Length: 444
Image 1 (tube, one colour):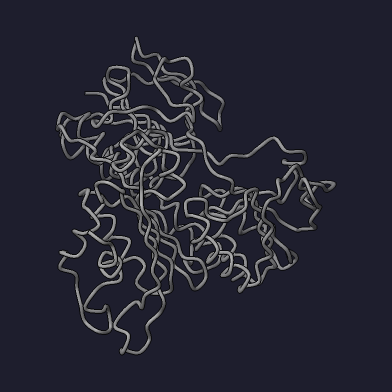
Image 2 (cartoon, one colour; image 1 turned 60 degrees about the horizontal axis):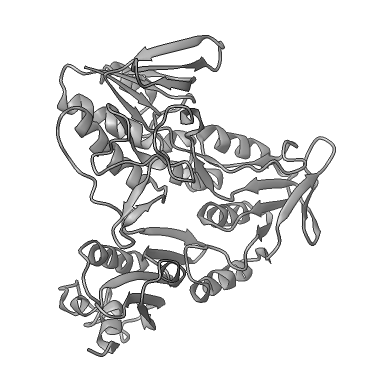
């Protein structure tokens, strides 16, 4: 059986490894448009500020390991430009030699990931303007951030923007963060995002909200950022306004995609075309709470979907159960966690909901060292089913978010949180966990 995989990072290599475990006679070819395989993109901001010593440290397995140890035909610098679904042939170009190539498949996985959004703003191609997605991007930023760079401007207040604001500040740079909307971290509600704004200002981040970038000025290198209201002098720019699925090469294939360009897949990771599968950032992700196909590109989901796609391609039927929208990020002294849906999303979905908030100690109040947790829970007005949670604080955020994620996955009611047998000792928790304290406040 000939398996071809487009993409050699999270989903692609999770699938490749699952295929060779399941089908001992598998002929696996991976077509990666870059030169790096199987690395942790989420670790890149911490490489730039030196918390992680080297880019090599975020590589799980290099290309030689896949070739020599697992007999995978792992190719690099091979950009796919076309798929002939009828003949089952993939074609493209070798980006270094400019030579054309073809690869025949019995089963194909599209795991082409996503690309940073890089608008056609005036001056966008000036030196000193970066995005962050790959090891090459990381090395480029590290090479550019010399002692001569005093001021950095970040365009975009999502997770990458926040992580990189901290990273650049750690390197001793002045940082301005520009966000088009009225809040950072749009995956949180505004009342919770205010805590993030306070943390940014406390750490010396110049926060510019409600302004849209229109372009950049400079002779050969960027010197300023121009918005619809002002001009800001700067020495380096990071554009971090989101990503889009890398699927434009599929436009003539007939594969069903959503309006963002994410490939529609079923629970078996099958696309609308026979023998073609998709997984990861380029695919849709079924959201258990929303009960619809969503697109929330995260490494955890990519690895899960890749494994499931590989198993199904090799004949072992597994299904992807879905996501609940869980994510977490470190921002200076705060941890920002969320799962399920926000008030904004509930309103967009026309869901009838109630909301509960609390400020609670991260562990028993009489034990020293506790920190305040800010928690917000949403639940359905009629059924009391838990819909989502947002948790921000210095300690114990990850524990609460993970508990809520499991509750959401199992579609529990807010009252059922009271029945959970959660770990308790004064250094770690109170006899009633903060999320249980919230549930106790909800009248039956």
